[in-house]
Image (cartoon, rainbow, N blue to C red):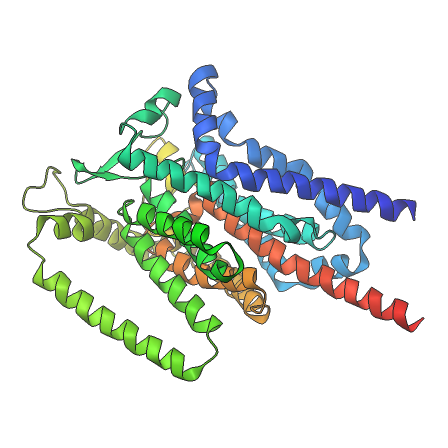
Length: 445
């Protein structure tokens, strides 16, 4: 009994730490940048959460191993096996690339961190949520209230604050760019709020907007509508086209799944098709309008950029595909994606997270990662009656699209939040099943 009580207290403490991580993630770019600019050692401050994951992960694994059902899950679950295989590929191919001088140690370590941290966090949150229901009971305020602050600050950036306000906390050329614009035009400021940039903010809002829409009926409606409208407004002014598309996909699936009437579903599909046709026609009709060109194409006839961002993206995608064809086993972690910019020979940015994984760990690694996503999506689908699981499944579809046009999973805020919530949602199912089993056993005895 003493051991059970100790395990329960440890699980509760770990859930509090996870909750703190959830709350701080949307703001950590600001405070770590300020700390780095003030005291130096920017990278060390940035990995505060990864350093926390070491003791948390060891404690969570110990808890899981003490529980017969969780121990069986760790031994037999295919997601766990695939994450272990994926991790092993990164370690072996990374060390091989380091020995062959294809990557330096800094880029390799950074690649290991950004490619593996969210999968490790998924397992940690699963194990903790399977031992205590604190996270499942409090996930809404842990996610929504920080998101509300991010949204309000984004609006202040657009309407009140000067564009370079973040320079006062250390943003700049050596840390994080203080602000970005469309095609270098000051009139088209791209909001980034407290995240690392407009595209990370847009990808984060795919999850948040979907979540707010799903919880609309269970909240104070006026406040909720205001927050949802504000979130959509901030999303629009990120000018992140991939995030716009991802949000449409995510919301479309969410609404389709939540509505049970076949007639209403058919009506919504027809309405969506009509809006798509009208929207496409309007886009074609007003294609020469400067506002339309800047918003949707990020350029116009008065472009101030030497190269079109669309041409750069297309070139990067072609280059990524070409690399995978020529090097199907990959060149090693740290040789592509954001980590590769730390290499001596410069970076390889494919503008596609999946191509990045293929460039680094080859077709085998890419297949394993896609399989992990499919199995997690399948588990969420099986539990879609739970609103969180439904939101995560819908947003996964949208974020998968976003990741085909950017490196969204490389952003720590989004990746740790989404995969942590996924682990929590699926782990709580085991806890609920165990509690129901205990209740039935007690009633029958």
